[in-house]
Length: 219
Image 1 (tube, rainbow, N blue to C red):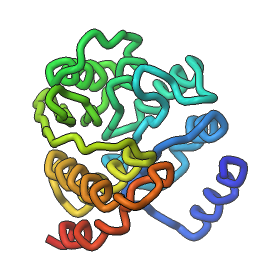
Image 2: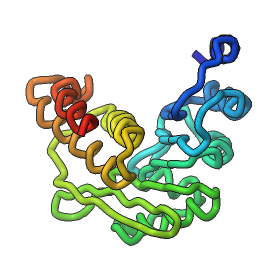
Image 3: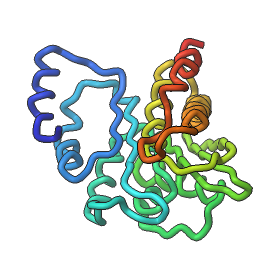
Image 4: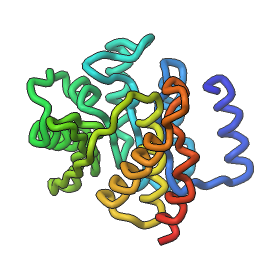
């Protein structure tokens, strides 16, 4: 859609569309170039800009992306008020190597990102821990917090997208960042637990947990 976005933005301006938040996930090269040039043309609440880098994991960049993409993303994330990278993405932004995977190392990465790129809220997601645990670590104005969940068996595409999307939904319903993360993590877990008979390549069965998520947002 990157080729169509200039016309879409012009239509938004014509209709005086105003958004409660801006959320950018996986982009790719062409879309990244577009957003670097045009992000300031969209009318939205500047204190609610979520950027989920979605460019690397397990120590490797995604296919088709390279170091130049990281350099450009460093410019874009300076617009974020909430950044949700995994450990690999955080290290790439900082130009560092991961020597340890732990809550303390994730906290260091989050604080370093917040300071270097002037991002108010940084949440490191999907931190694999020992004893089949997975965690998130957040830093807001030098205050940190963490959440730890049981790691469920299996490997599914799209869990990061589901997490970030449900996280933002919870946050826009006036939940604190930590509580929003908890809701999102529980929603992903429910989706995975409901995927026993579904092809893992198709992603987790998030539809099975939507009624639960809606009830959480109502509360």
